[in-house]
Length: 483
Image (cartoon, rainbow, N blue to C red; front, side, top):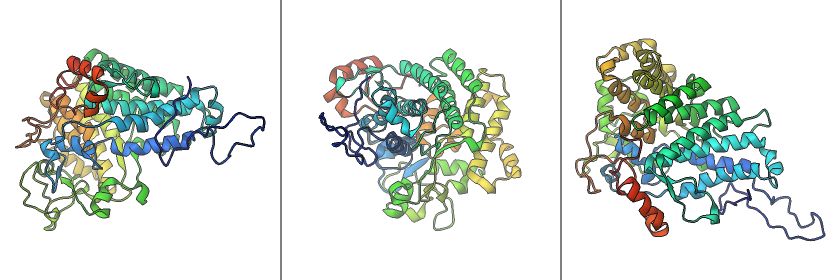
């Protein structure tokens, strides 16, 4: 395949230099401006985008909307997004940015004309496998938010400016294949350079890919249970995250160029746009959750007081409510991408559904313990854990398995808003009350994001086709797996 060059200028991208044909050998070649993009830089730049994928606080409503929808956080001053003001969300930047970069890494390491030069940054197979895993991860994030999206015809550059929308079911089927094949593609060649997530550790990349398959398999439990169960068991057999040491995180730095967005919001700009929702704080207080001090800060009166959710007009100031704790708001506080607790909650739910023969109660309790250790660190004690799981509101009940798992997953996934929203949409727990006065013309919590306005203006034929097939382009048309 001939290369489709990344056309967006970014700090991390070294562009292709066109060298004229002549008889003077390499005299016209500038060694400081290489003829092939540095794939290590492409990878680092694309991986940096992962910091905005999970619905944490960041620039724009696209990032924070899911965490607001599931009431983990709430607006402090401008009470609009918690009232669902934004309807159409733009995804074009993900196609022209990280997805395009991952595709270029694959192309450069596959094309006979460039693969030898690209191998300077890790074996071709290892680079391709890493890029495939991340590319599939971003595509899953997109389809979970919007439903049917451009997939098989996307990333073709000027070969196709009007890609069709693939059905979400078909996308999921291909994602399973991509993660499985990518994990098997790693070889014993040179380590991948520029990998700022897992530092080229092949064993960790394989666990990450298999765990993504596991989570994706459970996500289709209501839409295609047979396929889900098969993929789930296969992912488990291939090896998933096995301890908190395996947790996959994006590590921010004490550096203005790569600092935690929440730190920027709280400290650098002093905006303090978001705090912990009162819905979330009240529930953790109700169940005496020892993770609360690691999630929320006390207000100026020394109390845990969440931000009133979607309440207008505003009658409070930032000092009156609980902001997000330094565990998550420090300049170099890491962002969780996928955790051992997530995997255990998935296994507990699979056991409760009869997909696997493991003990659902033990897995549920192990998931809570893993989450507590993750959040509390050295402050964790077995005594606090045992007291916590003994409470009637927390103790496993097989007759309320999805409710108990859903409630605890909601807590464990704090600051992973998209994943929390995905869980809530699929199983309906925790029980949440919609905003009292929505600004989007609806009455319920949104179930998806509406397509970018440009989908109708720049790709109208395909847009009209997907709307006719999937349903009205509103926030209340569920995605395929949300049955």
